[in-house]
Amino acid sequence: MKIFDRLLLIATVLTFCVIVLGAYVRLSDAGLGCPDWPGCYGHLSVPQAEAALAHSPDAPLESHKAWKEMVHRYFAGTLGLLLLVMCIVAWSKRRKFHAPVALPTLLLLVVGLQAALGMWTVTLLLKPAIVSAHLLGGMTTLALLAWLAHRRFGSFPSRFGGNYNALKPWARLGLIILAIQIFLGGWTSSNYAALACADFPLCQGALLPPTDFANAFHMIRELGQTADGAQIPFAALTAIHWMHRLGALVTLLYLGWLAARTTRTPGLGELGGFIVILLLLQISLGISNVLFSLPLPVAVAHNAVAALLLVSLVVLNSKTTARSGRQT
Image (cartoon, rainbow, N blue to C red; front, side, top):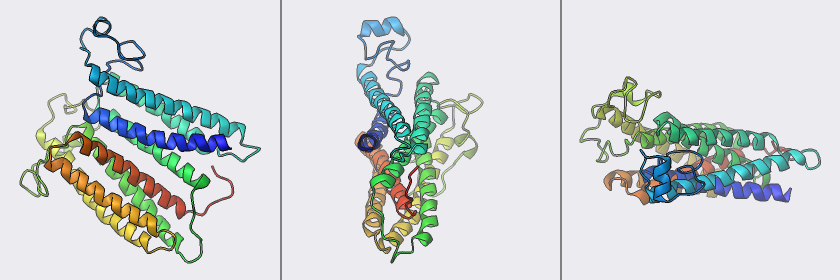
């Protein structure tokens, strides 16, 4: 099973890299750097301007954006191949080594859906629901890999001296709250609503600015449009941003309390401290995005820390779950 464990570690790290690259591509407005999928202007790499013009006359080539998109696709394609090999190894070793098969199989299905979402992101011209689902799919892949990696060779605290059963439901709830906040962040980004409120802690100089929730969270619509095809009102973008801020406050308060309780639990102190650090860093990055008008490095780091927070909550949930002899 050494090859399986190595593939698992590589896939987990690579998934984090793919998420960060995806955020970089999206935030640098390069999501449509290649107007087709899976290639770029009909090629496996970014072609010359003449070839691109012949393939897509209505989509002028911007090489710097196209290369960003293709590098992201290369990484994502490599990840898909790794998960396929990992699944094959798991099934081939399931009897002799009791290899886990359920999660590798689920991961393969998730990454297949991710490929479809990646294609639809391009062909449906950055429809917010598709872009947000693509982000959630990437985070789901990372969470499943982190869970599997920790179950296989992570450390588990002694069951003596700590009330882990009492902590477990709160850790589960923390993971759910973080998942909702990640969705709100993805919805904010995919609708380009990150700067709808340019001040902090108020929004447009008010605690409750003018908002339009009906159009803000209508999922089946085009980018920048309402469900009826009209231009989306600015109040809808404000509502999206405001909800993300509210979610951030709830997440900070709850995960802060959960982390404090975790630090006081024997065997989990370091993990609780790590969660506290990530929370403070994430809030600082979020505020910086507003005050400094969404600088690209800060915005990308905001996505990266969200992924690390997700991994830390997955590890916490794994540590508070009794380890069985046979992993799934």
